Image (cartoon, rainbow, N blue to C red):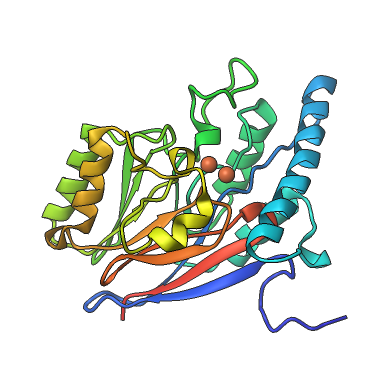
Length: 288
Ligand SMILES: [Fe+2]
Ligand SMILES: [Fe+2]
């Protein structure tokens, strides 16, 4: 058996980054996304069990497709279920200072998926922020079962702020690929504090500097928040992120299903984490 030098379960594929910010205490943040869970439990009906199993089978093929396209064939230790990946990623993050979850943790909204996610995250011992992805958008076609209560662990507001004293983390719900004026105001209010700011969203943004890194995405209208023809608030949001005076130090995203860390401009990087359904975890040492 090969011995892994990583302290994590063998299914976890870590990517390490440093985000130096003078005057900010050194912290370790973890980030994963897009685990596309489809679980069933003792309360699920036979139809709900079939859907969960069918979805899991479908994702096995899809994750292999993304892997072959972007990173090569997955080794045997990473060919485990979405649920095992999710639990191993949580285990690998359990000592971090904050866990960032950038959406599509669930493949679709169902009673069993929501029960499972809430149970897992309510037991997570560290602060976390979980923004919604398009698969968790409440108006989206991924709502397969009627009457499912919203997952308590997922952000239930258009935005949320975690204040670390010398650093802010702002999460925004862009699960329908739209930024609202309320969210722009939230960004402005965070910027006014003068604290360095980190931003978590599901869909990534595109600038001239990361255009070639994002070119693998192909379908920009689906994958990119500020795609051509997007609402004006989306382009205003990007302008604000890039404006020096707003003190944004990093942007964290999911949705792409391939690893994509690239500068949005000099000194400001966007960190896209690859598919959690294949075990990817980003780790950041933030501060000094
Ligand atoms: Fe996804
Ligand atoms: Fe997505």
